[in-house]
Image (cartoon, rainbow, N blue to C red; front, side):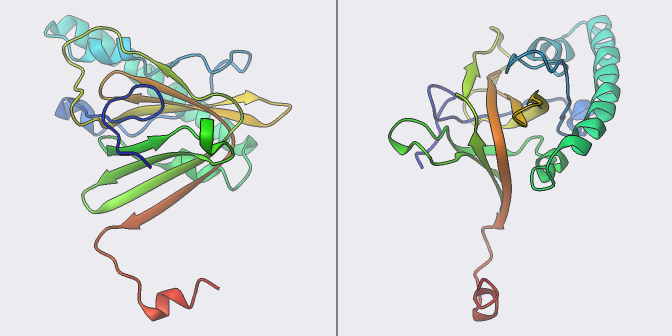
Length: 210
């Protein structure tokens, strides 16, 4: 994989400036209008996030009300979505990746067609690798202009998962990164891999593989 620098074309990187008051909010997943295609963030939008960063307390208060309502809807929608998901896909709905650093990203297209789309994230010495078997083209939505977006070291902010096609059982993962970019990943299957950078396998570990 190539090193991620900025969220452009097919390789990406990200960073977050979420205030401490909002930092504890978990990664968001939700099921919205199934008749829409990949679309854009439904509930946890870049515009709502920017309102939370406002210097105007009244704007922040109103945005927090909207955020709380979105969170409540998310919990209900996620529970319905999980019941419709194949068991092997459900782990992606259980992730809490807020503020994890984006290390690398690959959309699985072009000369490496057939390879899964991959996102590599890091938090201290922990790595999470998301592998998607895409059902369509990975898309990118550029951020609304604002100085709050942080583009040097990109982090994961919030995400949403929808059921995209009920007949073909495909889903879409929408991810908002800290540079304001939204990534849209349509997929039919996915896996979540985890590792630690300070762990070296022993013989006992290796013999359990096969």
